[in-house]
Image 1 (tube, rainbow, N blue to C red):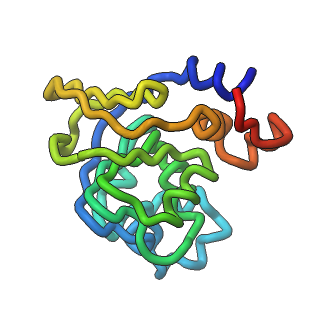
Image 2 (cartoon, one colour):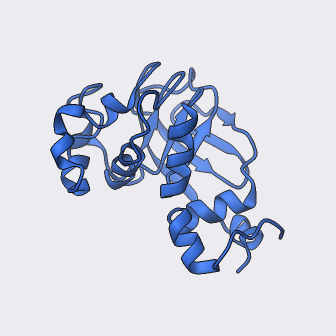
Length: 177
């Protein structure tokens, strides 16, 4: 299946919003004091975002969303930061803006990161995200939020589980439909 065909069949992501503020750093996501767990990512994922919300890891469920303000993922280029968010079951991170290295690392590990206006989303809102259409339906308040177009090749990378899995599957980046 081509990346364009995959984008057309992109599933809708559904889950609950966990709201965070601006400037959530990679230290908030993967606390530096737990450096010794970098070789045990499932164990490190049990501590994801605990410096921003100590109860997050115990409350998040598969499919849920991290919703934040500006500059999500700033700080060091810890590639395990988006990995442990994904391992915790988060289906996507929605924020007003992202640190560039975090954004790239997230796509590479297969974690959707969506730039959008998050002001109208509240803690515990039920969301539906359609990656192909570029829409977020807040089922709690009935509002629809849009985010920028995601190229079909990026959707295919995300659906493959990240860049390495995409390359294993397709052998190369398929930039044309």
